Image 1 (cartoon, rainbow, N blue to C red):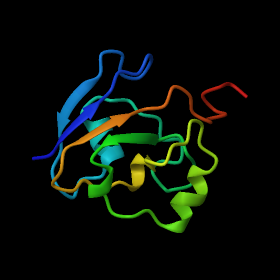
Image 2: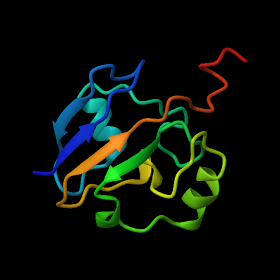
Image 3: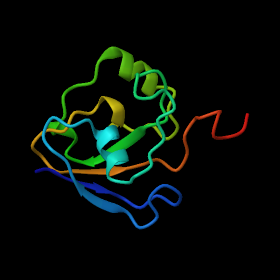
Image 4: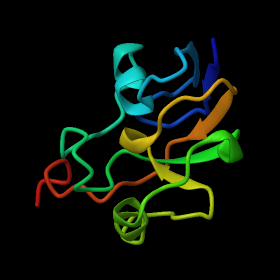
Amino acid sequence: MPKITVLPHHQICPTGAEIELNEGDNLCRGLLEKGVKIEHACDMSKACTTCHVIVRKGFNSLEEMDDIEADLLDRAWGLEPNSRLSCQVIIDDKDLTIEIPKYTINHASENH
């Protein structure tokens, strides 16, 4: 079972977390089920960037992103070459270390 290490995030996961997910699981859904309250404003329909994560370890084990995900990520705060939308990541058999960016572009949570 792949281990997912979530680096500390000041609001969502202050002490970090280590969870196990099954191969084939969706990363965003798995995080939520294990108590990591990552934002997902579009309900995982690939229409926003609020579930943006940076894959610090294991990035190359993931399937390549499609053009829609790549276009959306261009709008994400703190974009890095190893950024992904967690709602589009399907867990492979490799361990992952992820970082949830400090900020997200979510007008609903920002009271706009």
